[in-house]
Length: 352
Length: 246
Ligand SMILES: Nc1ncnc2c1ncn2[C@@H]1O[C@H](COP(=O)(O)OP(=O)(O)O)[C@@H](O)[C@H]1O
Ligand SMILES: [Mg+2]
Image (cartoon, rainbow over all chains, first blue to last red; front, side, top):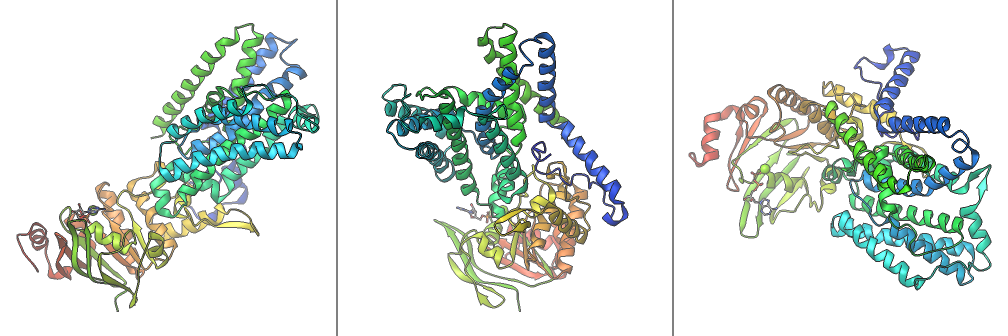
């Protein structure tokens, strides 16, 4: 319920009549609330993306009954979108404020190398995790400082970080793969590579994080301020919202989610390479946009990030199974991005 | 005693003298119409009262006590609210979320607090009812008319129980019907004892609603009198400079 409600304002959306509350029966009120909830939900992009995911899954199960609807394939699909989804949650916060973070792929690469190096030096798994997350957060902090306090466009700042963080990763790794993870390697690898109840740890983490992000976006003053910054930055500032602090926080948070994804993926693969995450910024941003985020800011939510990432992976997996060259994936994702924005535009013009 | 008293206020921006030696008083339960040509210094005067920047010279007394505002929050804490020319609202949020922006009500215990939208919507509903506006608390501002947006902006000032409301051209960009709505809102604020400053270029608005008129010309105050003692013709003359002082 909470996750699906990507819109920060629909909770009391049913009270569209000026009649005093007391004159309605409770049941009628609840019914009307429920209907309004459904109405907003049907009008929202995440709903249609969910429908698309279900349709594709149904069609694929029918076409490929031997390979698509299997436990193994379910495990693979969910794990493959889990780390993109985790990053898309952080990206969502940035995009709701009206910014963008192009550096997430590189930050993921850097954080992965830092984890690998700490493990290789024989340190404990938790130190490796802390160092990985710390290096990521630091990149985000730098992005945030330049965007919020120097006032540079997020596009420019994070493009710089995209280049810089990748170069750090290459230099730190001396351009070698790191796979000798020392005494704590097994524990570290179990975090990202393990599974609970037949579902990858990464997927559990994504679900927990999506729940937390959804809750924070929708139910906390901080979440509301994030939407306010994206809706009208000048107005938010005049009202007393700490706009600069919010911006600093969302860029730090976004880079932190990239580092979390790095910790999980490096553990799953059992090695760290400095090319980890190359090009992921596109998949992550595409997930948020397909899920229903508005690149102009002010719209989006946790479920949108989750379902956007799901759709992309389901399409990729289906193409693979249908025997279509996986290089076509980019064309499909590209088409979906444009389609998503187009739909948003059409719905927007009808509302106005 | 005046709620707010400005004494010999001057403000220069480099070589430009935006205000020179302006005396200005505000009383509760009164609407002051502030008029003048473009660049006369109206917005500068409002911004000084709102704490956007300090005056270059002169002093400001609030309830008889000298005050110095360093930032807009200082003025707001002192009970002075501004409704901005371009209606600073977040279109993607609901009316009540806008009213409560940056002063949200929360519930919970200790540091675990969540938004109390039910309470905020309820309070916003009361505020809109006080303003006799048909604005719905849970509706997004994006879909609202100019008059409803004004009500949201004004409800914000109401929420904080402001003593002074400054309005910079609130009727500049809205339809005739909505102007009437806004003027009604201003009368209600006055009847509740607030001091209201209305900047407007529209003579009928000012003469329809103000109790007192102040005219600025090139940074100087050239008139300050009860509305009955003036006329649109005289004010036009004062604004253009055809009449020197009145
Ligand atoms: N921040 C500023 N920096 C420099 N000059 C300013 C600034 N604000 C206003 N001015 C100048 O001060 C004068 C008065 O402006 P303003 O108070 O905005 O007039 P009004 O609101 O009556 O049209 C104008 O000449 C304007 O150019
Ligand atoms: Mg002005």
